Length: 377
Image 1 (cartoon, rainbow, N blue to C red):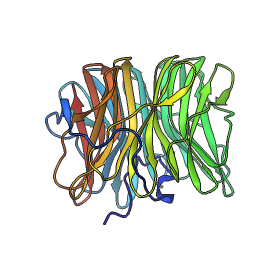
Image 2: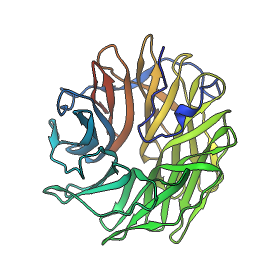
Image 3: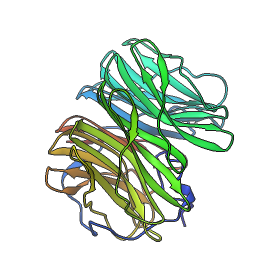
């Protein structure tokens, strides 16, 4: 029996709750078009655990994936680049001898990219300048720890990174903004207990969305916040399951077309969850599940009103398997997706450079977790 349901490393709360029953979208069979493995899998750094937590793409020939590799039981930053032919490990610095890892990445061009995560109990931000990755100073406001889960940018001079900060035993949301010169903390509202922001999507300097979760009593609830150019404000999002509903990923295609994905729990089984912002309100949109076991969505990426992909995991016969859903403008459909070996295969991130070209990354389990990447076209 599995000890826990897989989530992206950035999701803190899922392990506190047992899983769910069905709401919207019953069991279905996989449908075309398909995703496929793309040559050899991305290389691993060393023989210990390697995981890719996030991916971004600016074109069919330029994509980045980040996460961590483990060496002598210590996590070190892992950066890989797709050059149109193969994935190759890129040199990336680490801060100190403690754990260093990346949870998120964003790129605006071939010569400009950001990667975020943590070193020890402090935030970690690095930038690609077209030649090398280097550490950029970043605030860590929590007296007892801060971490960043994701980053997004609308231009080289406008980027947001989100996560959490801890002071004593209290967890609070955290948002940092890049103004073209430095990273600065921007106030974010908190609700309930243990709120955290898990993903961010930027439309413009005056329009950004962040999603996550917070606890209310014994339940986990969705958290949605919007940046209007001057302040972050909490937006109402519909409750779905009990004891838990949580959002892991968000993509803003425009000011009036935003998707957020995650899972909900009603008993003992995870079910996929997608919510849509139409410019006025958030509404749940039915999503398919594959079989009766745990299914969950971890990340979402869209390029148009008729091309959005969400990725995560589903329960196979004896292990978790990859799950890819695609929105065609009318409904969410399952895309066939490959798996490596017979162990767990979990997708943690997705990025699209166009409606016809997307990457999804995560890990597959062997003697140690190993990098996983699939191409969707």
